[in-house]
Image 1 (cartoon, rainbow, N blue to C red):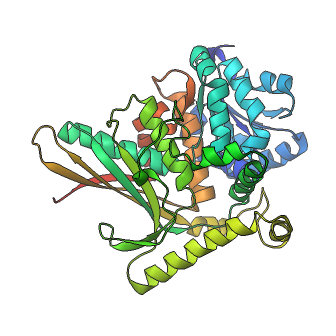
Image 2 (image 1 turned 90 degrees about the horizontal axis):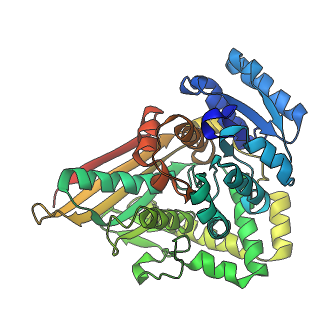
Image 3 (image 1 turned 60 degrees about the horizontal axis):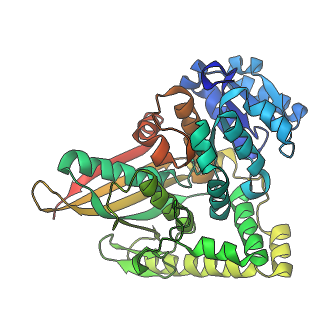
Amino acid sequence: MSKSTAEFDVIVWGATGFTGRLVAEYLARNQDAHRVRWALAGRDRTKLEEVRRGLATLAPGSAELPLLVADARDAASLDALVSRTRVVCTTVGPYARHGSELVAACVRARTDYVDLTGEVQWMRRMIDAHHEQARASGARIVHTCGFDSIPSDLGVLMMQEHMREKHGGHLGSVRLYMGPMRAGASGGTVASMLQAVDEMAKDPSVRRILANPHALDPDPKQRGGADERDSMRVRYSEEAGQWTGPFVMAMVNSRVVRRSHALLGYPWGRDFRYTEVAGYGPGPRGLARAASMTAGLGGFLGLVSVKPLRKLLETKVLPAPGEGPSPEQREKGFFVARLLGEGKSPRTGREVRLKGKVAAQGDPGYAATSRMLAEAALCLASDKVPVQGGVLTPASSMGMLLVERLRKAGMTFDVEEQAT
C-alpha cells in the first residue's frame, strides 16, 4: 500500500505504556490531530480498550479510535500493522530489545517512523542495516524525536538558519548549556542506560561506538578533534557565566547533531564543532550542584556495572519501565537549553555571535517529550516534508517545518544577536 492510500496517517505503537498514553492524550486533545486518521496499537486489546476509554473522557471523539493488535516479535504481524499507515509513532523501548523488527518492517513497507530512542549503539546498527534500503524504498526512519535529541538537533539548525539568512554564512561552533531543568526520574531512560551497560559488558565494540564522537556519521571512522569529546569534568564557563558539568545525554545529542550535519551535506563546514554540557548556575551554589551531580553520575555508572549492586538498585531505587512522575509533577517540570554560536559573516568579514534558547514547560522526559514525538509524527503525516528516505534525524528530515510546529505547540525556539 502506498503512503497516499494508507488506511491511517499515524499509528501510536505502545499506546498502553506510560509514554505511549501521554502521546495518545496529546493527539486526542490536539485539534490538528483531529484532521488525521490515527489509531492505537499494542499487543493487548484489553489494555488498549482501557486507554481508549480514558481518552474518551478527554475528547469524546476518541471513543471510536481504531484499536490494532500486533506482536513485536512477529515480523508478519508487524508487516501487517505498518502497511496500514503512513507513519508509525513508537514509544516501545529499550529499542535495542524491542525495536529492530519494527524498523525493518517500516523499511519494507515504505512507512515513515518516529521514536524516542537515545540508544546510540542501536541507532548505529539500524543505520548499517537499513539506511540504503530505506533511501531506496522512501521510508523515513527518524530516531530521537523527544528530549533526546530535538532541543539539541533543532536548536543547532535554528541557529545555523538564522546565521545563513541574516549573514550569509554559517557558525563555526555551537555550544549548548542544558539547564535549568526540573525533571522526574524516567524508567524508560534508565532501562535504555542499563541496556547499554549490558551490551558493553558483552561486546567491547559497543564501548568504542559509544565513545566515538562521530558514531552516527555516515562514516563512523571519522575522527574529530579533542574539543569534540564529551566533557566529564566540572568547569566554570566564562561565556555562560556559570558552573558546568557533564550532561548525561550529551553522548547521544552530540552524535545526532553531527549526523544531521553530515546528512545535510556539511553546510556548516567540515570544521564545525558542537559540544554540550549541563549548566548549574554561578557562585558557590552552582559549583556545589555541578560537583554533586557529576559525582552522582559517575557513581551511578559505577554501581550499575556491579551486578549485585545493580540488582539492589533496580529492586529498591530505580524506576521501572512504564513508571514515571505523577500528573502534578509532569505539569511542574520544565527545561531551558541555551545555545551560544560563533561564526564570521562573509558579507562583512566580521565575527558574529548568536544566542539561542530552546525551552518547554512540562516534564522534559514525559510531558515535553510526548508533545515533541506527537508533533514529529504529525509533521511527517501532514506536512510537505521534501526529504527522501533513509535513517534520518529530526533536523535532516523535518528541519524547520518541525521547529515551526513545535513553536505553535508552545515550545520556545528563539535566536538573538550578541554584541561582539
